[in-house]
Length: 236
Image (cartoon, rainbow, N blue to C red; front, top):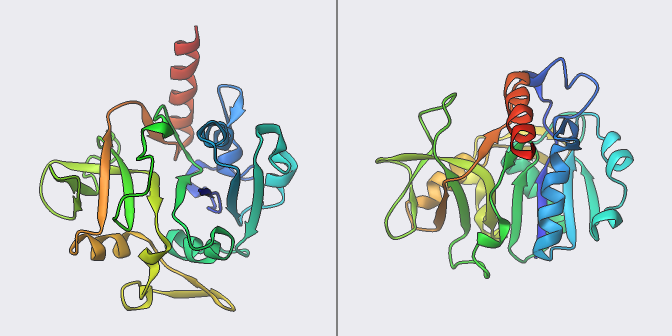
């Protein structure tokens, strides 16, 4: 199985820290956010990792190299000067990911989730998402995890998508009929993934699991500082 790391965002809410450093390369507990993911992917046995880039793209190969340090092969995929959003980024990456299921990780999160807790083989669903309890800064949540393991749009209790999941390329079949699309460049549509996930939930094509441990969307300097303090406190 290959993996995709979303690393193309501008990181606007993280400014001024992201004016000269892309958010996934910001350090926490003495290593960049994205390296925490690379270490887990390598431990899982994944060898090929696609990293989509846009803002300050040249810094990623400079900081991470070819991945050999972790026993990985890193493939950098430049989206252009404007990121393609989550759906467009995934669609653009399929040229390198191929036809098989793949593991997706958002490059700007931190979690103690153990990737070995993912299903050992891809479920029959088109996507399998790791869900977490809604954080204090976004209490509304995203989806409901039913007792039979399927995700649905409405109900209670709401959980938050962690930015970690297993995906089949089939998820993007007929995406044009679902997504609100903008054209970011020649042959590069830009669209969000969430509406596509919601559309397929109605057909019971999206499953999930609940992670009750530590997770944060490192979206602001304040959250980064809190995470840093928490991790150093754990280490000491």
